Each structure stands twice: as C-alpha cells, then as structure tokens.
Length: 171
Picture (tube, one colour):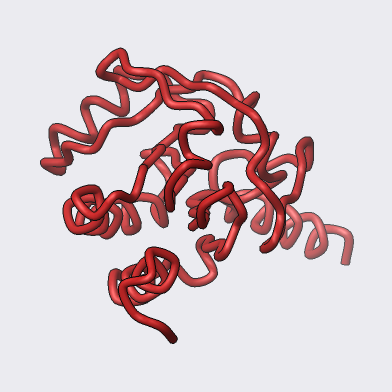
C-alpha cells in the first residue's frame, strides 16, 4: 500500500508543469496588477504603470511546458491582431534564460517581445503555481480574466475577452 501511495505521489509531482511551488501571490479577477518592471528582449522596458494606461495582456510561460507550447502560438495570433488595436503585451518567462526562449521563438516563428526572467521574482507577484498564466487587464490594470492550463485558452476565447475589454463590442 505504501508503494502505491508513493507511486501516485511521484506521478502527481511529475505531472505539474515546471516545478511549481506555492511561494507567491495569488491574484484574482478584480485585483490590480502589482508594480513591476521588466526588460524585454529588444532592450525596451515594460512596467506595470505602462500596462495600466491601456488594455493589456500579460502572459507567464516556460518554453519546455507542453501547455505553454500550445498557448504561445495562440498568443502570437492574439499579439498580431491586437497590438495594432492599442493592447499592450508583456510576455514574461518563469525561470527561463534568454537562450532557450530565443531558440524556441526561432523554431516556432514567433516574433513577440518577451522578457527572460531566470527567477520567479516577477511571477511570484502574480501567482503561486501554474503556467501558462494569462491575465487580460482593463485600463487601470484591473484584472478582468485569468487563463491557465485548465484548459489552455483558444484564440476565439481570448479574442472575445479582449474585444470586450477594448470596447470593440459588448458581451
């Protein structure tokens, strides 16, 4: 019996994405995004203050996570569609160096700006566990929607929420 419990525990710990550990905040819909500043891969700076000025989309990811691998091409489509409509984007890695992110971006043909973060410092301001984690925020930085890997959101769902937040049409 102990062996079965051990195997189940081991399996469950291996099935979570990229060594989750409960060490951070756990923001909810209606919360305001916390203060942070990151440097993007193109050298530009993105801050919470900048993101609070317009509708925004913040995504935390790790390229070795299978659910992130599904979500990132969807996010590329969202980025292509909505960056010209005034939506600000911040794609932020969780414990991943620039070299591995760049290799993934090249392999998948992605061109979104991202911020490589070798630690969980920024991620922990938002959440304790799970990537991908996508926050859709209205003006003022108020979180309107949160998406994770349960299930990974589809383009149509994210687009509908961004349309609503941007005032393109009402629900």
